[in-house]
Length: 91
Image (cartoon, rainbow, N blue to C red; front, side, top):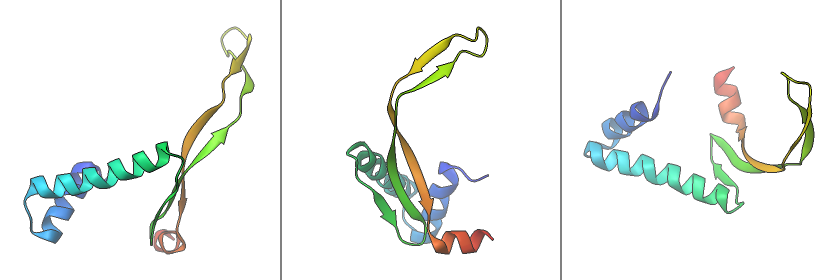
């Protein structure tokens, strides 16, 4: 499993810059995606996919322990739609 540190290392190797510069580049990309999603905007990365938000309406739920009906409030959640290139690469 790859993590953020692995991405930073790969950017560092590819660009040949300092590791701190690579980390700032990765952090900037993540911050930009998060900020755009907070503002309700979509972020499209060619060859990777589209990051977007989705509204989830309020609904009824049940407490599994007691069986009591509870109200689950409406929320927004992050969503990712992979690009065709990514889907084909994973096949």
